Length: 296
Length: 290
Image 1 (cartoon, one colour):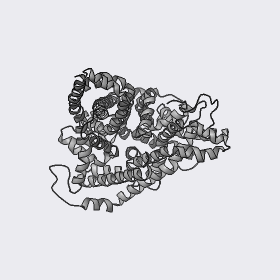
Image 2 (cartoon, rainbow over the protein chains, first blue to last red):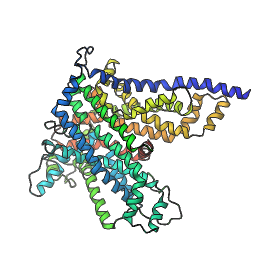
Image 3 (cartoon, chains in turn cyan, orange):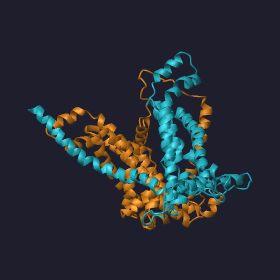
Image 4 (tube, rainbow over the protein chains, first blue to last red):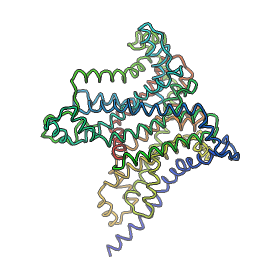
């Protein structure tokens, strides 16, 4: 009898739980995440300013216009640059610092906190702080130049240097995040392996090269994934620094979407940019997962 | 953030460092990074205390004359507090809604077996791949058609929706680790799933709720694109929008802007120091296994 009751009660109760607990999440997620992405694909076939209903079907014209646009080409190139700097400068820096700061010494924890701080700041605040750093009249950089009697450069105002300036800010802001990932991984490593290698006569660099780094591979792969996906979506940092200028030299794909789609309410054009970005992100995620993260 | 090595057996008096180049080189390298990271931050706080003339000739050092007025004027202004209030309302609503909606769904995914459960969980997991920016225009049109444009909820609902995937996955993993016997015993005793969720699961899950809540709060507190697109009225602007407006108005008075920046990042830094454990926990929980 008890067995029957125990079976019956959870079944009734569980159905109520499912019907009561699941719909809010599914509804919100579908309405604000999934549908808009589907709609982006639909709207991207229209020439539409967002009012009334979309009627002017133009097929793939929006995509053609996006891909033909010089500004989009620059934005795409900039995203690639950001990815390269993230992978080649930021991650090695983060890894080196993690290796140093995973050790116990006085001040290690304080340094970790300091290096992580930029990551916690909003992109907008970070961007404004560096607008000051780069300001040609009042900025920190300008005064260093003046110290040497040189003319202060306006890094953000020149198409040749605007992207370089932004790349420096990106490293400043995000290396601490990756450092923290690496520190967490280092702290959960089996120290016995390292100890054993040392006893067997491996030097520090050998231990690092053949034991520690291989043990970190899962975290490195994850870090690379975050770095690339984050780089593809960069926007908030660009706005306070350059808004994508001058002469569209520092747009990212998302700031391009904002500047050329959202501000002018070119719904079809902007949606086409969104779909292109979406396809790039999803393709990257799936390929990467398949090739590099199979075992996780 | 724990400084203990999790896997270090107690008997190892001095665990061999994995990487420990000569001391002075290490110290110099660390010092350079400290200068790189700290200089902009310190100069920002100090710059807010300077006159505009002094800022130009002395951007690095301590102010000669401390201009407390820069800070005082902002602290006495209505717009500063209005802006923080907006941010606080938006972020709090986002956190509360995220926690309620995500924990309910996570509970079902963790404890109830039903037809289609895996499929629905995969559906939600896909959300990790979608950047909000890709569909911002359709999102704007949807929010407009729902009549939520220029309201707090026009910002809150999309933010909740976009934080659901990560939140549900983190919560579900934690819920699954709670002893299943507890639930079985409770069910035999006639307790409903819903009562169990409310009176057992939630109280036992405070650490993960704090982590998920903190992450949702920080994301919402710092977010820019969604409020930028959904809000028109200055009076509703959260601080990232408010500070951009302020910077536009005082474009070359950098000392005032720096004071304003300092006063707006102060809550962020205080929050970070208070919730640092949860922020780092969420980061690594989401990352190491996610």
